[in-house]
Structures are given as C-alpha cells and as structure tokens.
Image 1 (spheres, rainbow, N blue to C red):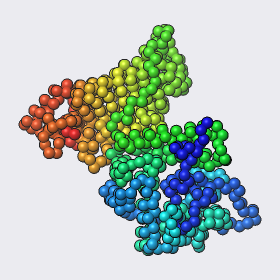
Image 2: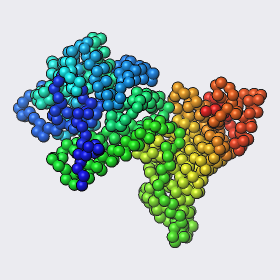
Image 3: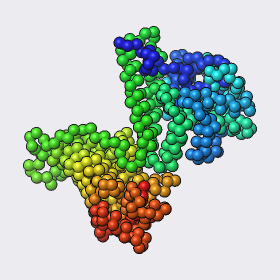
Image 4: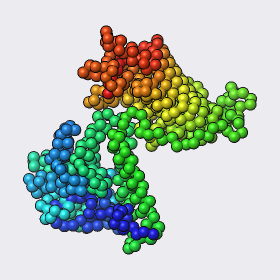
Length: 611
C-alpha cells in the first residue's frame, strides 16, 4: 500500500499553511488558533477542539451580556464591470492563482495603515465554546472586541489581529460567560483571523474603509476563489476571475434560473465540506497511516475530485438555463413482463372497494402507497392510476418503459411535487409514454419541468407549474400536448430542439420567459421557442398563448437569411417583405398554425430572432 504522504498527490497531505487566515503580526498560527468559522471561511481548516468546558457553579451569578451593536453594512453597489475593475485590475493585476493570497494580504495591509485600533464584532465557530449546540439556533458566537493591527513582519506571515474584550461586555448569546470568552482568547493568544472580525457601525471614515476592504476580501474567498485554483496552472487567472464574476451576477439577476443557481451553490458548499472532512480526518491520523486509513483518505480525496470536476463543467457551461446539462437517464428499459401480463398499479395510502369498481373483472391490480414504488414495479404496457393526494416522485426523472400514468379524478386533485435534490423532474426515454390528469409542481430542480430526451411523450389535461425552465423536446424526440396548462417558466414554456417534433392542441401557455436579464434576447423567448437547424416540426391548433415575455412563438435562426435588421428581430406584425420572409421561414420549418389565440405577449405573436 502506498503511503498517504505522496509528493505527487494531496489526498492525505493538505498544507495547513494554505488556510486563508491572514496575520498582521509575526506570530504563526498554531493548531489551537485555527478555527473554521461558520460565517466567512476562505479556506477550510481544522477546527480547534475543546474537550473540557468551564461551567459556572450554581451559586455563581453570571454576568448577562449586552446586545451586540450593529456592524458596518456596505452601501456600495457593485456592477459586474466595477467588480472586475476592483479584483482584476486593482487587487490581482497580473498575479497567478498561487499569488492570490499574497495579493489579498497586501490589499488589506494598505487599508489597515489608516487605523491600527478600532472596534468590531468577533464572529467565530461555536465549537470553540460548546461541546454540543444547535447550528440552526447558534450559527456563530459573536463578541464585541477592540481590534489592534500591526504591520506584517514578513511576507509569509498571515493576516491576523489582536483582540480584547471591551466594556460593556456584549455578545449575541446573553448567558455566555465572560470568563469562558477570556479563557478561549487566552488559548488563542488573543490572535484571531482578521476576516472573522466585523467593524461596528458609526466609526470614522478610515474604519469604514477598512470594513469595506474586509467585505471585498470575504467576497473574493466566498464567491470567486476555488480551492483547486493554486493546485492547477492557469495562464490567465484574472480572466478566470472575470468569468466567475459574470457567473455570480447571472445567478443574482436571474439570467440563470434560481433552481440552477441554488443547485450550483449546494454543490460548491458540499465540495467545501468534503474538503474539511478530509483535512480533519488526516489530522487525526497519528504517525504512519494504516492500510484502512490510507484507503479512506483516497476515497475522500477522489470524492472531492469528482465534485470538483462537476463544478468545473458547470462553470465552463455557464450553468446554461435551457434544457438539461446532459442526458442523465441511467435506468435500463425493462420491456414487457416475462409472463406477458399487464398490471394496473394503484397509488393510494389506503385502497377501498369503491376505487376498483370501474375496473374489469380480469384486471390485475397491484396497490402501492407511494408513487416511486409503483414506477419501480412497472413494465411496458402497464398503467399507473394515482388517486387524489399530494405525492413526491424522484422516479419521474428516469422513465424508460411504455406506460400510462393517469390521475383518478380532476387534475387539481392529483398533485405531484419534484424532488429538489434531483436535477430533473420528469425525464423520459420511453418509446411511447402518456401522462394524463396530473398537476406537476416544480420545486428546486434544474432542468425543464418535462424533458423528452428520446421517443414520444403525450401530455393530456395536465397542469404544469414551473419554477425553472419549461418543457424541453430534445433532438429526435416527439411531444403531443393536449388541453394542458403551463405557467411560470423562467425560460420559454415549450422549447423545441433542432430535429424534434411536437403537436400542441388546446393548451393554455402563459406567464413564461420570466428571466430577469440585461440581455434582451434572453428575456424575450416567449411561450414557445424553436431552434431551426435542422428544422423541428410543430403543429399548433386551438392554443391560447398569452401574457408571456417575448413572442408567443419565437423562432431562433442561426444566420441572417430571414432577418437583416440591425436589432436582429423580425416581428410578425411587420408588413411588406418582412411578413413574406416570415411566412417562408414557417413553411420551411413545417410549422402549421391554425385557430390559435395570441394575446398580451410583450413582443407580439410570432417573431424570428437571429443569434
């Protein structure tokens, strides 16, 4: 078994000196002074452990802490351009990733020259004070302190500050003993990471400038820095930071749908937590690791690598908001049951005789109390009948067999919620699958509410309440959608990829394309969107498409054959040759439209956009 301390790999040897704590004096950060704050943690470090905590005697009277004063809150409104100027031009300039810590330290040191002593709130990990605690009720321990900063003695010293409790004794925990705080500070030699200290409000302009600089550095480590940056070569690090700034603002302004952004944030947080777990596991290994410990180190390390790779893919693809990142259905198609029999699966908490009175005498029935169990037991040809109630189904994201899923009653009575931990809600590779009389409510999933990856899907009398993107029909797939209502999509309500086929009849598609973006093209994709090389086939009959941002139907052209205007937009309402060009484009795409009602769409009925 290879040793865990291989020079080539970092699986079992992470440099503690890479913690993002920065020190103003020349004292090195020992193990007891390394903490993992819950507030702003630039780099994960091993939390200090306190096995014995002082408890006051029953007769001892505790001094109740005062309420903490308000801390400085930045009023600076950064634009993407101003952020890029600050970090890429002023702070980082032409430095490499491995020099980023030094650049941040230098930036803070310059700001700290204006004032060496000021008041702030020290916010740190409750693990320093409590053996057991509720993270939900105690996210951090805060204490009012006086902060003293001294110039760094060497380039290798870390940014830290000397703190001491001041009067009146104040904390966010009223019964936190002052003696315990003094004891903890004595153990830390009264030196704490500078980024754990938040200047209080109503101090002079010099302290406000320091507070803003601290916020800028925290923002860098919280949103722009990645732990793998200084482990991999990057020819132009500032260009990478610019991309991450754009990504941050795309998530903030809604260009990237909320569920997609939240999924990315959760994955990034998971990466950081896993890295902390690895470091803490390594720190508990004494002398040479055993074979079991070495294996566990490598397992944790490769889990981190996998999450890191996923984050890089998402960053490279800019978390694209329309359609899936890649097909994810991994379940194998079962086909028909070996016996050749067809089963009807009833989904209900309790089954009564009245529920089955309409079934024929020879119907084979299997009852399930949850939707996933019924899907797991389905073979091609089966029918799933869902009785009124609210359900959750992660299995909807892996549909491969030819089945019918229908509600027993009106669609408003059968409500199915997405699993927010999954990337997709309903995804199908079935050759022929039908969903009837259902309400689908999307919560937290990143892909379209329904993704037809291949084969054919029929939606009939369904209500689709979107939170992310709408229905996506991928290349080569087909959709038949009748008498459905679709609302709330951040992207287009229905998106047809090149070479797809769709027949939409009697549907109500409204309040879609709700992306908030400075890019006008992204915010006017409308109710139905078509990408035209190779052209998809679409039949629209008797639909009501209304109240969407953009056009009722948006046609995306990859060149300027049908649009030569400088604004790259061709409206259906335009007259003359433009109208003729649009008609020709519709004919070339096998687009059949009849008896539809388009109303209150912000850009008009039908339009061509050149990208």
